[in-house]
Image (cartoon, rainbow, N blue to C red; front, side, top):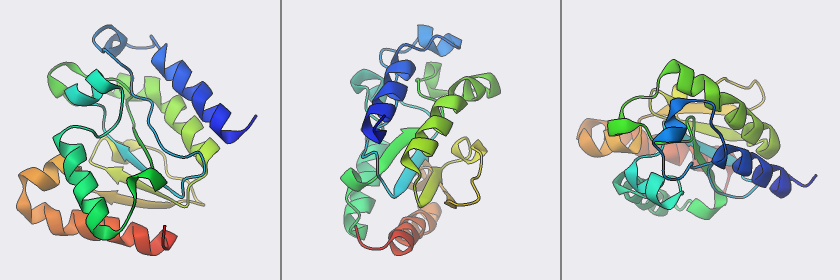
Length: 171
């Protein structure tokens, strides 16, 4: 099976998942998007309301800020695989429970295995719960929403994304 087909298979399983109660509150599960041969994966917490509405990751205010930073750093969003540790929105945008994280973890692990990126950027505390892989550079940073809300976090967030560009070379 080609990597694109394998990723599409994971995406279909995510969209039809009923492993936890979030399946009952979502409009759209958000499996993630990007090329199957991406050298970098960005992993967030879980979709917000705009992501739930569109079925795409990081398209709300946090996504607009992320896109702006990526553009300024010379990193095309289209070169990255962007996803979340939990694939469904949570009521009131609350932090996902450990059970919800556990229900989605096999999907994220399958995505990492299929893509085999050079680097994974964990955006925020929940994303930092994902397993580490010996052969993959792992970079923890703030979630774009935190960098937007707290100006003191912006420099580190932006420098961490610049570090990704340096690690993987020009895209």
